[in-house]
Image 1: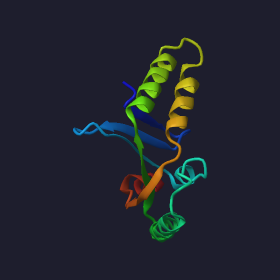
Image 2: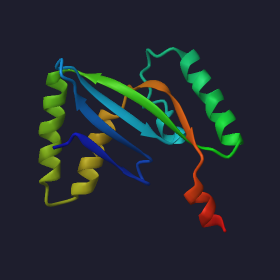
Image 3: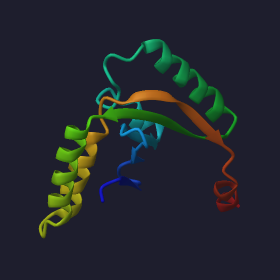
Length: 131
């Protein structure tokens, strides 16, 4: 349906689009700091203090060996969502170059995001792979 913008290592992020019971539509996104903190991803009206604080947290978390992700969101009005959904369905039905067409639409949606913060987890699976 276009509500899940799937993760790939090439994209370095994934997103979901949620329609709330009150009708509000929100895109929630998570991904690597390298990808999520790119200038084109961040809402230009966002306070730099939130971004700076998030970067400090990321540095602290990663220096202790934790795996980090940046979490963000974007409010969508119904017209923007409808336009996105129509374009997504067209791209998903394309016979030629389907994946790159879908990724291009997803990339456009995952811009002007409001950074919410960062998460950090101990990645035991990753550690066991190093043995």
